[in-house]
Amino acid sequence: MGDTSQTIVVAGGSLAGHTVVTELERRGFAGRIVWVRGQEGTAPYSRPALSKELIQGKVTAETIRLPVQRPYGPRTRIMDGAVCARLDPHADRVLVTRASKEEWISFDALFVCTGTNARVPRAFAGLPGVHSLRTLADAERIKERLAVRPRTVVVGAGLVGSEMAASLRSCELPVELIVQGQLPMEAVFGAELGRFCLEQHHANGVTTRLGTTVTALSSAGPRGPVTLTYDDGRESTADMVVLGLGAVTSCDWLDGCGLDLSDGLGCDETLRTARPNILAAGDVANWRHPLFGHRMRVEHWSNASAQARHAVESWLAGQEDRRPPAFADVPYFWSDQYGLKYQMVGHARGHDEVHVEEAGAGGYPFVTYLRGGRIVAAAGVNAPRAVMRMKARIQAELAEAPSAGGSSAGDPSTGAPPAGETTSEEVYAR
Ligand SMILES: Cc1cc2nc3c(=O)[nH]c(=O)nc-3n(C[C@H](O)[C@H](O)[C@H](O)COP(=O)(O)OP(=O)(O)OC[C@H]3O[C@@H](n4cnc5c(N)ncnc54)[C@H](O)[C@@H]3O)c2cc1C
Image 1 (cartoon, protein in one colour):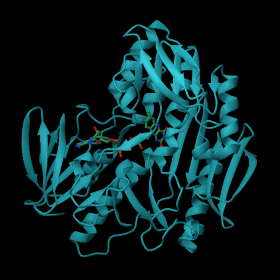
Image 2 (cartoon, helix red, strand yellow; image 1 turned 90 degrees about the horizontal axis):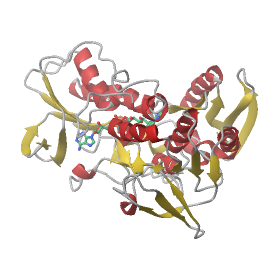
Image 3 (cartoon, protein in one colour; image 1 turned 60 degrees about the vertical axis):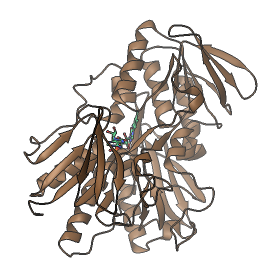
Image 4 (tube, protein in one colour; image 1 turned 120 degrees about the vertical axis):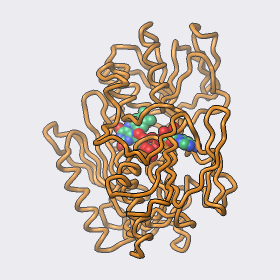
């Protein structure tokens, strides 16, 4: 497949990049692959484990490495500690930098899998005692601090903030959770399941400040306390602050290349950008979902691998003069907190009706979200079968009437989401 003279550059060394490389090799790509893995300088690993098992001390950096089914082929060049610094789309080449060295690499195809970074307001960056959590190095820095049993304030109650609070409590450390809205995970789950999440935090000994924004942080030094100032003028101190303020896409290196960078890297339904030999997959990809009928960007683990495989298929189809297929997977994510598994399928934005019932062995809340009378999402706790049944149902129903899930969503000509619709990164920010 492909010819030996072709070069494919894969930018990004996490799940999406790893899956693109593995899939190209599995499908017998005969050319050269240059895999630029980014600044982290590590082999790909399970990022979801960072806020869960790694902080809890149940796994180590070695045991969370992504499995490599067979060694990468001899025509795959792995560039660790290297980043794509610039794209010249007119000459089909990328500038790759490593340490102080620069190299232009020409490509026949480029897969952009550069994901996201933690969102850290400039005023909070680099303060001693203040951490964010996106990389293995971030998690190891936090873990190291746990030896002194710090009083921790977690700022932000999206997925990462909520999981951090739960993991710190499992280490029996004192935790306060700052929630900008009234409920944790509310932006993604809505009020019904958000209330359940709040009850779980309280039942497990987390104290919460609801409806509160942190306006300033100051630090007395590496060991000294961090002072937090809130929007109501009050202050508190902590030994450690962990920020869970969402993520920003890693697209700076694409600035000025002429592609759509309005929220991540804009692609069509097939994950190809306006230049069909440049494709995107994973957290960075913003594509028009054919079933939901509007653009979205999904910051979930299973999406990154499914999109990576799909992007390879789209590129290959173009090479073989076949019509590239649309990427129509129904989004899925999970979150582990206090021994409970939360799972959600679909895309609940813009829903106008919610049904709550009980499902699974624990009789926990199971929520279905409807839009225009159709189920567009479902979420449950310890109810994997019910959630997965719902995934199949959403896929089937929306496939029957594509775009029904997004019929009132935004401008159909541009695929823009409706005004006020939040992106997935804002979901994590709350
Ligand atoms: C703490 C935490 C917990 C999570 N838990 C869950 C969960 O429970 N369930 C779930 O569904 N999802 C979870 N996620 C989200 C999930 O990890 C992401 O969706 C997934 O990692 C996306 O993979 P990706 O390859 O698209 O991007 P990323 O994982 O963001 O990787 C991007 C890669 O690109 C590299 N890079 C960046 N810029 C450049 C450049 N210019 N050149 C070259 N390389 C570059 C980076 O170094 C990195 O290796 C969690 C995320 C975090 C941070």
